[in-house]
Length: 155
Image 1 (cartoon, rainbow, N blue to C red):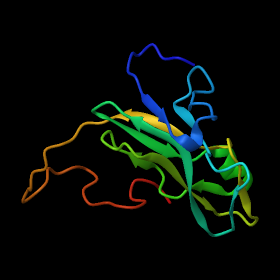
Image 2: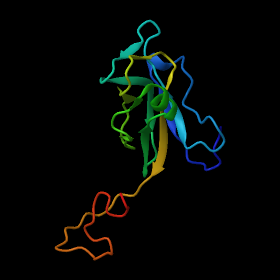
Image 3: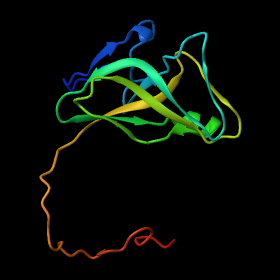
Image 4: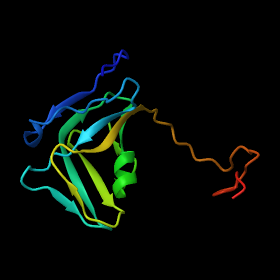
């Protein structure tokens, strides 16, 4: 799928990912590009229950200034296998030029095998703005005040 927004994401294939398709959107209004596993054909990665692994994608990206890449889980892997992205969302900064890797964790009860070309995560591009950090002696009052976890609901 193509975007009419005009903002470009430059992607460089690394040597171990040259035969894999570039990440792409799988529907007209998808927010995330699918990231693929660039593990060797003859060496799939098995993630035992309760363990994690960094899975290569075979790509490096050049995000435009003011954008970040968020590495997010795929709902189907989570639902069917209990496999998710450990540091979700993982952040790829605009000035990072190394390989995008995905830290998968197996929270399921069976070993999970990651094979070459498997869709393992989503890559959502989001605009951000850096703030000027200012120390303050006090903060503006709000109705919520210091109410924390669960303070806005009935649970």
